[in-house]
Image (cartoon, rainbow, N blue to C red):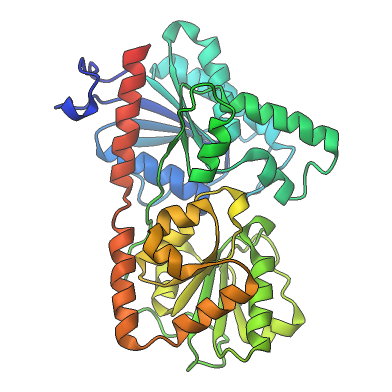
Length: 410
């Protein structure tokens, strides 16, 4: 139910006063734990709340309340029935089936009582839950919005699941069915848009862009990067998860190749404390691992870096909030080719930063580290100009307009 009456004019540009909605966001995850998926959920919700909408985030029993949560947002959690379940790292877990059943019941109860206009499901599980609730409350004519952060089957495989062919075929079928469930679909990358549009008759998925999530403080502490022996060397940084789908195996290959070819730099890998990072012996002396790296200190680390890298392969089809944060810090960022990387970098920067293979990655990195100071300043200006084209406020306006359009159609 809209808090105010919706617009009568279907042209978004003609809406003088956008309607205000009550939105139930379904987050089948231990929100909030400061990783990429949670950043997207939080900043979408905050940006919508800034525009006057009321948001209810329904999520698991574990997780924390972020400090910067907008007053228009409330978090409702399922009962702590699986009291032993404390996982906050990304990745599948069969116990989540039971958690998602509890989340479905919680979402149903909230939707019956609060009478929202929109069910906004994050991830495949959240969309499936939203579809069930929508069908059970068919008389309310709820709008189901699907927010896909990545491909279901490919991500499960990257975490070591679905090794049996028959099970994988079953999940491929389920994934395609879920793609067809929402009234409106948003995705985190152009590659994912193409995949999902292939499963929908309407061919109507939209890329809902990520945006930088960081703010910067001056004078980062000198001891942030501990155990760094070659303090005079330029630093190359990776931040994020230590899971296979993030491309760390490819990054280790790049580091080994760089050492073999005499590239003088210090590598910093910082992030996920929840999965042990096994570093090959031949590269250990060239890098520092910082784990855990609190999100509040990420901006300080990026301010100290000279170059960043995003080694994730393009076939993962995820968005790239990491890349946007690097760009927001003005960092040149070497990455492997993929639709999300090209989308966010734009043609000019993609021609500079995108690598085809390990050797190409090394040569781009070497060029960037040797770049004269005046060229670095010019390149930084181009990076900052490009990243300023993306904002959560812009994404919120896009969501708001599509919410209103769907409500006019029902």
